[in-house]
Image (cartoon, rainbow, N blue to C red; front, side, top):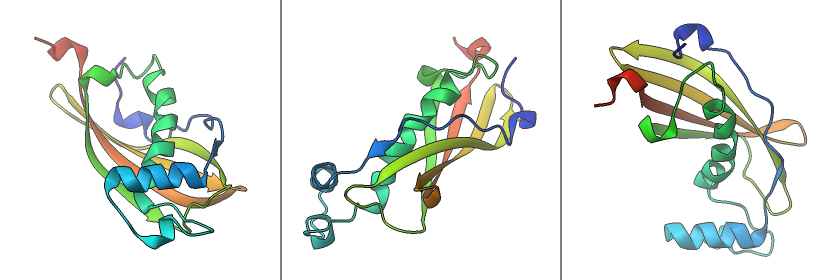
Length: 141
């Protein structure tokens, strides 16, 4: 059965906690070429887009759900946004929980909007939203 609008609202169990560290923050900032001193300070904060690293870990549950029929090799990441309540910091243990917000089907294309709640101590720090464009298997040529 392919993914349909009826799957909106489905949530998955949280991914394993991700420990944010000053080393990971610095590596990420260097990788994106951002020299903001806040990322290298004595008590660093992570760049807002660092949340994508953690959110992506929660995607496995979506692609592992056999009922949806999603396949990574037929998926394109169409959109990404972050709603930051508070920055991620060195020492945070972040728990990522994925929920399907919306599904639209157009021909052989499924547009799946998801939100990954990134929580620290049970409180949302970042909501990472993505739109995935997925072609169904029967559309492979």
